[in-house]
Amino acid sequence: CTYPPPPQTCPSGTTGTYPNCITSSSPPPTQTCPAGTTGTPPNCVSNPVNPVVPITPTNPTNPINPITPTLPVIPIPPVTPPITPVAPIVPNTPFVPTVPVPPSLLSQIQSIFNSPESDIISKLIATTGLIIGALGVVGLLAFATPFSMSEIFLLPTRLFNLLLVGFGIKKSMRPWGTVYDSITKQPLDPVYITLVDKEQKEIATALTDLDGRYGFIAPPGWYMLRPKKTNYIFPSIHLGHLTRDEVYLDLYFGNYFEIKNEKEAITKNIPMDPEKFDWNEVAKTDANLMRFYSKRDLWLVRISEWFFRIGFLVAILALIFAPHPYNIVIFALYITVLIVKEVGVNLSKLGSVIDEATKAPLAYAIVRVFSFELGNEVVHKITTPNGLFYCLVPNSSYYITIEKKNADSSYTQVFKSDRIDVSKGVIRGRFEV
Image (spheres, rainbow, N blue to C red):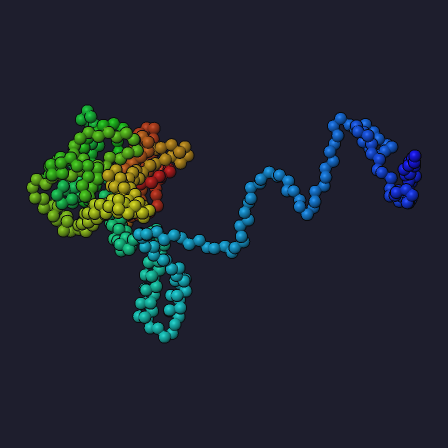
């Protein structure tokens, strides 16, 4: 029998099929560390408990967006040139007049008068026109609040109304009391007036002058006035118990009244009713002897009273239907005037005599009033314990002397004034002696 020979293999380091063996050029097989170790053979170490997984870098062409918190986006406004705001158009807005600013009034007048071609008449006309125009501009600037066209036309009337009312108040407020005819409103003279206290004791007396004027000073207390005149009766029945009429305030009808302040003068207005015809009053009116009363002033006061009533009604209606600032101011003015008309104003009525060295009041001094032109004594007054006196005189020029009371009740002249021009019918002020 035949036994086949054993197969032959290529020796180590060669490859192929025997006998075609060729030397192998391929690298030896890669050796790795056994399981449970890491590293490169033969340097193999034990694997840690929590092996760190290396982070494989990402492809820069496809980056993974990290998760970041969302932040508010603040828009950046575009840069644009500033735009001037335009006021919205409000319907039914009252007309606001445009007030032009005039050039210098004095320079225009000078240019008119310096022009050689203008005659005197044209110069006067042009100058008058400029002045009137300037006054109109000033008036508009003074009342530059929104008001309607109708109010523009009513403005001169309303201002004239207030002027008349002011005139009436001025004529009604005098630093003296007046005894007058309740029908004609004409002052009466001579009227003999007695001031009595609550015990019916006579405190002082006075005789009214041509303008029916009088006045008293008395210490605090309760008093009554008793006026007497031929052909007239008191108290007035015609006026009843009014507190005022269209000409006079603070009317008196025979009741007791209280004086609380020692510096308060008694100057109540006393109406008397005519009982018979008095020729003396008619002659006095015809001769124009009264200096503080005239029929013209009487009618102006009455007209101002009617203007006040009508204007006050218009002011109320304007405030209700058009409550603009201008109408509010006008209404406030009328309220102020109404209070003044009813209450009056505390006018300065008294004079005072003070010791120059001690600044103490000079009590029971004699104040003598002399005519500056004639030198004769017109009237004299005795000061109160507080050095006060009340002295009514006609408007004219005077000088006064003051005599101090001595300890033995005699008097010594200690003061003589310079010329005093009286224009408001009363001598008042502070005299230091």
